[in-house]
Length: 314
Ligand code: TUI
Image (cartoon, rainbow, N blue to C red):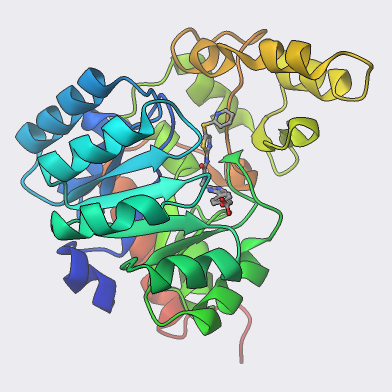
């Protein structure tokens, strides 16, 4: 069985986090992952404090295992959400899209493990100094809001830069990715895209179908002009947006174009107006399974590789 020190730190069976995906990662998905032995994570990106509280309470009902909340620091009502998770004493908080420094002390004194996503060694060192328990090194292969570094280049450099555990994210969907992450020095992985096709993931069927059909070149990064690059599946919306970025259209109009596009994908499965966030490994996602089966399968594959069962080595 594959286990690493972070499993003991967090009280989880397998060293795998489910990514906190905006408008997607809810109590049902997070509890399924936590019940499957990983760390399920609820997304707080809706900014709706009452709704987030409801999701936390529901997850506590659905699982006795540890789970986390992901706070997107670019979002709305961050101060209130930061206080809510402290008051609720959730097991883990992960953060994305910014520097969580000013909240770390409050979360730590509530007994919460704090694990920021960091896109660089500089931010990794900064949050380690402020008391982060671990960091998630996320490469730009991931879906959603992306940094410039690749997972392959970022993870080993972050491992060298800090003494706390590193979780690798971006471009990982199966046991090969997990084995590679361990080879780079990570103690765990975070996976988002593959959990989109978990049976317990409540996104629209069209989103799942698009993902199951996707291949290696199916994703595109848009939003660089406004400084918020986002990776999604190629679709009428993302192609139009990509084209619009190179026209004279104003920044305000460009921003307006994206409003409601995540919801259109997740809730309505709207092929024309939806932004279907997904990572570069979308081509590896080929079947719908229970979250627990996804986890078991990934670690069975990783174990073979890590025990010397590589395909080519003599
Ligand atoms: O946050 C993510 N992925 C996301 S957030 C999101 S919601 C959204 N939807 C539509 C448009 C924009 C956002 C969808 N996917 N991943 C974690 C992540 N964090 N990736 C990169 C970063 C990051 C970037 C800069 C973390 C820290 C950071 O710090 C800059 C600084 O120094 O403040």
